[in-house]
Length: 143
Length: 285
Image 1 (tube, chains in turn cyan, yellow):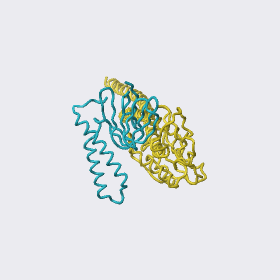
Image 2 (spheres, rainbow over the protein chains, first blue to last red; image 1 turned 30 degrees about the vertical axis):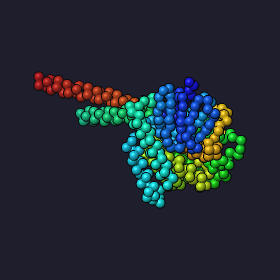
Image 3 (cartoon, rainbow over the protein chains, first blue to last red; image 1 turned 180 degrees about the horizontal axis):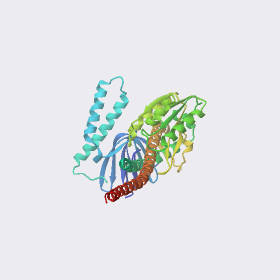
Image 4 (cartoon, each protein chain N blue to C red; image 1 turned 45 degrees about the horizontal axis):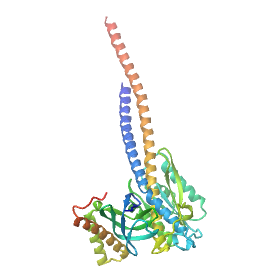
């Protein structure tokens, strides 16, 4: 089966770089799955989970927005932040979610509502990825 | 005899100074390496984002109309993001950056406002009563991208709101461990023409080129600010490393000289004592 190179990079580091079979990403116009030989594409991403299949294994990353670029030879994800499941700090994500929900409920005038909403979406994305991992225990080791 | 004791005390003092400068040198080496690694780790992202930007800018249309951060306006007010370390003991680095910004300000015939990053530069500009729009200190030795976002936020907002029309970054460019040079870099308006294009691929843009560009440009600016700060940290640490190595060498040289003096004085005093004793014995005999 054909594979394609996937690079997930943030401003701070390279999160993932390997040959993969399929990438499913949260695009602004809906989930999109990308197979090898996809047409060149440049799309914005929403906070959410990025699903990657490589060989027989499948794994998830939490990303908080960014861009996805499909080139003839590779797929590049420019993420604002990206974490593999084992890097996610569940307690912190829960805390962030609680805080964001609190802000949205009370919405004090000094807080930008869209920012609070974005924060909520980011924390939810992280928690969802962790949740997936739990269900699939013992789960595959994303390498 | 007091002379000997004094020399010995000085030697001890200089020895402990040398220990401190030696330790500082080693710490600076470590921190420099870490800052360099972080800069390298972010390079794929910055290369990618520059490429995408260049591709977008090459689209056949009036680019400047696409996004406010690309629009060139008549320049009425300039902003300089002046990036320096928080601390001294790094040779001439701070003085050099401060001088660079100062001369840049003096060259301008129009008002300049400053965004001071780092305490050394802030203190300097305050002393000269410059117009300081914002100040950021205590970013530490390993700031994350998140820590630097408020800086980019301010220049992007001020630029978009028409408060400033041109923004420069001034910081210490890391050339090598021995050489750091103050550099001035235009950051706003973004000039995509300056970015080299890799290849020509016709993309499908979702939701559309203008929207992608709108999201991309602020990130491009944020990334440049972040990188300038990382580079400034690498420069600071390597300048400190060299300064501390020189200090340690000087201290060791001084110790050698003083030890020689000490030994001479000690020998003299022993000779004198012997003379006293033999003299006394002779008198008794």
